[in-house]
Length: 615
Image (tube, rainbow, N blue to C red; front, side, top):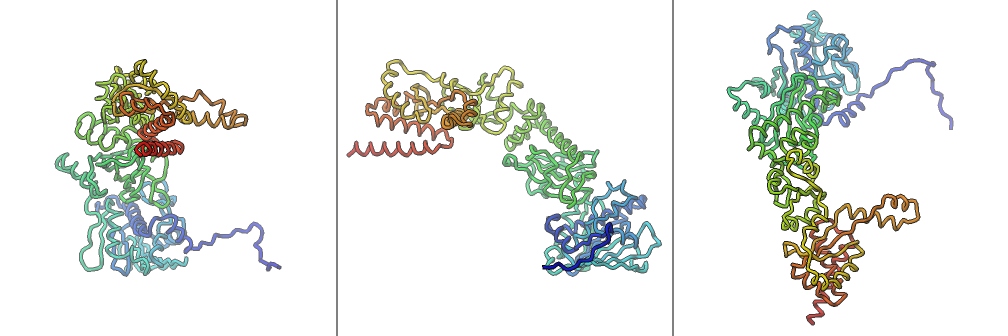
């Protein structure tokens, strides 16, 4: 097979990339923008930036001299502004060159922080809903320049022509789209109005919308942001901010926290959620940049522990990503995140100092968030640790209340360990806190920093066993044969068996077996199985004396007193297995397959024995 001759360019000759505009638009729609609806945001953003540039030319003009007008009647969508406008040269430079932005031009590069956009692809988003973009513009910076018309098409072609001044009597720009038939969802008049309010409700320039029915244009942003308004009293301000938070987020805030960072021009509110949220679930926050909505799901504006609030903010100096739907992670954003975190800490401190009712309602809903903060924040720890709720042998209690009755506080390492010992420890007068939940064990160990008179220690099985009363020697000797059979039956679980008396008498047995002990026994077993191999040497070096589980039978329980008197060896073994299985289930830890099998077998054996006895 012979390849055809292909003419080659001279060595070293330069060529220009050819851009498939339809392919580029497809890339934008599927990978850069979240939805075709962003076309209106991009048009409004361009209009706002044009107004910003116009304001630089005419700083003495009245505040509302320049504005934005939107029009949609079902057949066209039009966005008109009184901005700086474009000359014919600007049109060739900025509209016909993909990737070029007037806001990147050298003459204003040092001032581009005043503009929302920093990427020259925004106008292309219009091709998501239309096959042709019509731009009519007249420059305010060059008043003698004629009006200029640019038509761009989805196939990559465009035309430019100049028009007499009468075609556009005043400076500014009008962008007109003729929507495709499949874009009606985003270009119907009601939808355009909704999108305009969604994206532009906090814009500082007046924006109006006309649906073509002949009525006056409806204001899109009739009032400034709620935090920028004046109110007759602090109470009225607080109620207005709470009402705005409820309107934006759909819930009545427990409280609202005003946010103000002058260094980056950030203002807004944080709304405290009235109900608890799952740990680690981060809510998105509503972020505006220079009044234009950037994102409703900006998680990065607050630290992870602040999942008890949702924020709506407007900032001057935060940097959008290329899609303008999230924030660029840079030093400025990191500084803003730290500063906002400090505002939340200050609010918690203020509630702790002056509003105990609010603090109680907040902690009831969001104690987990505060615990995560207290672990790393000594000030919050000192302020709030005594008031945080924990699960204890006295029920759910604050550490402050618990420490009043227990000068020695014991803390478990897992939820299952707490559930194993809670009833017995309570009856024995021991003060035990469940340390199995996130942050709890670490925080309880820091209690002496706040209450020096209190000591804290991890619960050791030996500590609890020491508080269980031994049986008398005669009872111990009478039960010796049964205990020996029970130990033999449970040897497969590395479990010892002992006889004690403890309350409550309704508890027949207590299984003392920590997660760490089970892991150590599993590792020891693996080392024995691998003995002589490489893994055996490694595991053998790590192996410690494997702690054994302990099944403690309660002599005060009638069932146990009956069991230890059994003189039939097989029935005695079966009863010991049944007592072990019941104690394992009461611990609420996951059962191993061998334990599940033992429980089933012992139940069936006891049932068979009962049936034989009755027959």
